[in-house]
Image (cartoon, rainbow, N blue to C red; front, side, top):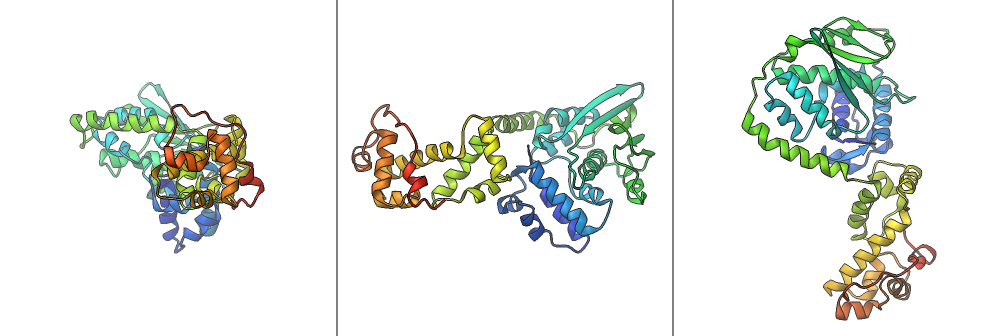
Amino acid sequence: MPVVGAAVGAVMRALQGYGIDGADLARVAGVADSVLNDPGSRLESDTLDDFVAMAAEASGDEAFGLAVARQHAVVGYHLHYLLQASDTLASALERLLQYLRLVGDHLTVTVERAEGVYRLVYTCPEPARGRWLACDAFGGSLVLAARALALAPHLAPVAVELRRPRPAVTAEFDALFRCPIRYGMPRNVVVHSAATMRTPLPTANPRVLQSLEQVVADYVATLTDQTCASRLRRVLVLELRNGPPRRDLVARRLGLSVRTLSRRLAAEQTSYREVLHDVMMTLAREHLADGRKSVTEVAFILGFSDASAFSRAFRRWTRRAPSEFAREGPAPEAPGGVGGPLEYAERGARV
């Protein structure tokens, strides 16, 4: 399940507070350099969970999840400004729930309204390693986000309920939440008074709200349309332009193990080889159509052992020779071939 890459930066900043450089730790956990360099990127939640667990162990702090919360706004992208432009905390919360997908597919938040209170019930992954870290971090982020939006540093919930057992030292939890905390509860809940949720936001701006609403909605739509195969296709298009990539490195760029990548593609009724086949055929046609590369050069770029192997595969894809395609361009509704570029897999493939 993809999550926002900005969380990685929050973990690394939290580690700096303990005098630890988190970059090498992140790479060991499988975080791609593209995620380290771009907070707007996405990575898999299990990769983030591994990194957070390793970071917490390195810090030696049972309250490390709260240290991450202090470094990490619960939202990113334009959503942060959209929430700021809302008129009250309650309306900001409604928009957060509407666009929670921007934060990640690994979280859920529901609101239960009782007399005089709002109960924010949230769930997070609870992996075997570092089980309570995500719950601590997200719960802390919800409270800190309310303070930041209201520009009220002393704003506090009425109560907090946590599934985690009571920590050996509770000082950090008391300092962040500033309210009664009950541990070992069935659910994670942050309780705010209705009066707090009606708090007007000093940054409310109806014009900004109107313009950003569509921007955020459009971005969420792009995330909804992403499948594992489409994400893989985008990575392969970039990688194949510089030569054939290794499957394990491609999986790592997606924040997945090779096994997980194969399993998710199978669930979408495709495979790594089929997606690679499609991308190779598309790039082969593009390279040949622009006329700047020879058949031999295109064969090398796509990882074939020689031009003959590439020519046989290209004929299966398009029923035309590469030289003919380069000379005459694509034919209208050129039929695709059957099978895959077997030579690519069996004769000196460099993936």
